[in-house]
Length: 123
Image 1: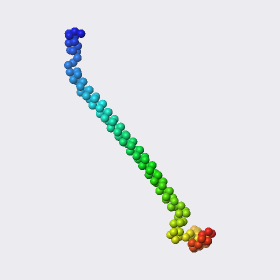
Image 2: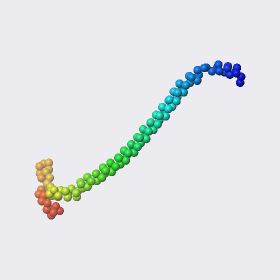
Image 3: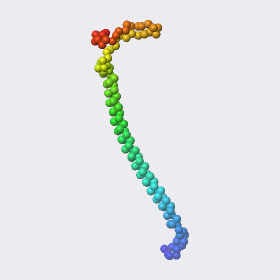
Image 4: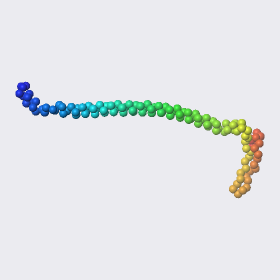
């Protein structure tokens, strides 16, 4: 190319064109960098939440097992045989034959005193 032709082409391109693009390029680079940093922080937060969730799920399983063990212990204390043994240890005896008071004021059945006598209990 000739020098004359190059000078004509140079006159077609404005003198400050590359200077006008610099702020735009910097803005795009800053926006992309901020976006990447935001994604990195979001990913770290999601991972932290995931670890916390798995820890809480493990803790929930342990607490469920403990609750079931405690419920079994309570159930063993409220079983009829265990209740009878504890009542006898406290000196209680089985009641006698009950009597019922009817709404009209009559008594149904013959009440008996609780004696604790094994013969009386078998009736």
